[in-house]
Length: 407
Ligand SMILES: [Zn+2]
Ligand SMILES: [Zn+2]
Image (cartoon, rainbow, N blue to C red; front, side, top):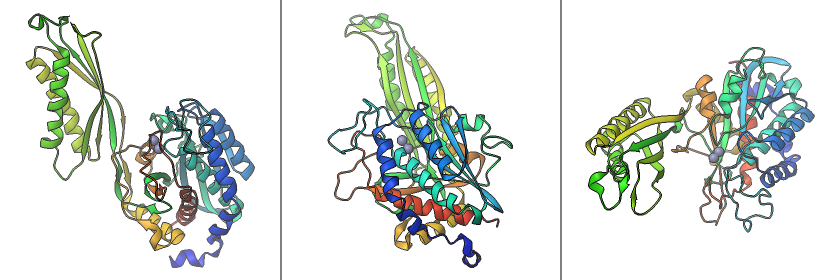
């Protein structure tokens, strides 16, 4: 702390810098909100991002992981490399047009997770820090990633050499940082938590193969619909009976498809599900047991089950030491009242892929609209209190400044 205060050059007046950029940030966020783009199709958004970063004086690389953009801010003094991540994509949802006067202009696409805010915050932080480039130690790597919602954006950027020497990011960062606004947490507050924050996800696909026939002669068939029903119920006992009560696991089958008509017993049933866990042992146990239980239970009913994991993301685990430092930074930025504990949830985040490579801290910024009913993410009723924008910029700028000096 004392060290930082001696280093007067890093004491940028963030509040003042923010004030002159606040209107523009809100305008940008609303513009992104009106023009949402789906995963890997963030063409307009990434064009604006690249243009803004270049105007702020950053070195810009486009087309990283398809539609991703990287902005490098090279400080004039030696120091560390801090990566700041923002995501740009929207969701296939129809927004309630009554809710906002700047609602989505794209049919069936909506910024229902707040990535419009993340992008506007990232651009504002980059612009503030760029103005103080000559005083900055180290290097800030601003990463605007595509396709967070479908997973795969982070992986695509890494595959394009983001962390490689001579790559678009100019080498491996020392720290990874980012934030997500949370519409169910108090507006403008920062939540910083050490350790597990967001869950690992495994996307599951199951096929149950029976023997089709007439609905009136079930004894001549093997009914996959009945087996699917038994399985959905039986597999929940893995969560309630085999996962330690103090550990977390969620198993949800979000889709079951089978059959074409009331009087036909179909040949197959198809299930799609998601498994959310935090601990590697719990995850491994669940995946093994889902496979064993489904194949054996199906066998008991004379059917055949095949199970596979189609997609996986690691959990977001905040580095203990970095979370402590970011909490200090957040407290400096927002005051002790502005920082809360917690934010742990079963949702997943593509940020985990970057954090698996380089330790970091993912911050939650509250965005609940006071007096409103809950406005959950990924819902047509999603909305945020824009107070989260200011808090996001303050915490992000402070944390980057505090983590840049070599220590
Ligand atoms: Zn989302
Ligand atoms: Zn999100």
